[in-house]
Every structure is written in C-alpha cells, then in structure tokens.
Length: 149
Image 1: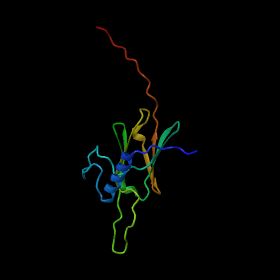
Image 2: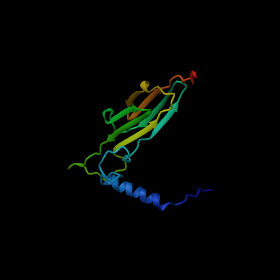
Image 3: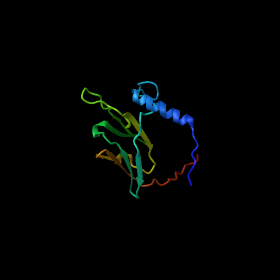
Image 4: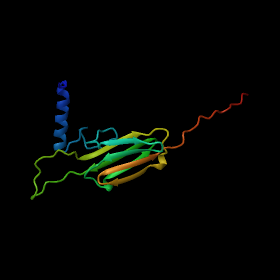
C-alpha cells in the first residue's frame, strides 16, 4: 500500500526560485546586506543531544575549515555562523552540476536556563563542529522577606 502525498505547487515554485537564486548568486532576501533578519543561503544540519551533565550540538559542515566558522553566545542565544565558498570555474575545469549549498549561514539556538554560558567548548574535525554546553546547578527560588513600614 502506498502513501498519498498532497501536491503543493507553491512549495515547488519556491524551491525552483531558491535554486535559481543560488545558481546566479542572488540572496533570497533580494539584496547583499547581512541584516540580522535576512534568511541564510543555507543552514547546516544539526543534532542536539542531552546528558545529565551537558548538552551537545553537532553541526555538519562538510568542505569547510575551522576559520570559516564563528560560534558566539550572547544573552542566552548560541549562534553558529559561517560561509562555504563557491568553487570558481577555471580554464581547465568546467562546472556541470551544482547541488551542494554555498554561501553564508546562521543557526541560532535559545539556551535553556540551566546552561552555563561560560562553559561552551567547541571542536572541529572532519567537517563536524561539536559544541559542548555544561549544565549549571538549578537556581533555587529564593524567598525574600520584605519589611513592612
């Protein structure tokens, strides 16, 4: 027995436009600006795992080097940013088909309250960025007695 999938022509049209824009080096937002709210050219796949002691985020960044990636934490938000450079055509090499994603990307994750932001450790090996975020001790609610005048 086969599953039926509803055809959505709008999704196919958006996919076609995104491929067209990537092929000609155009950004999806219509400009070259690096505005915070612009959509990235692509987004790496990530796995997020949790143990009793820490969270681990693994991001697939094949073909990239450590210098092409920036990781930062600001006000409870972890950001992974970078850019995968497009290979240029040369006289002795002609590109026939481009299916991999190129350009800049940004992935942002809101950290839970029980993460120690100062504990973030990063490693990069064989195109895999691994971030380890240690958990902090849960903050106990503290009752404050107020003097009545």
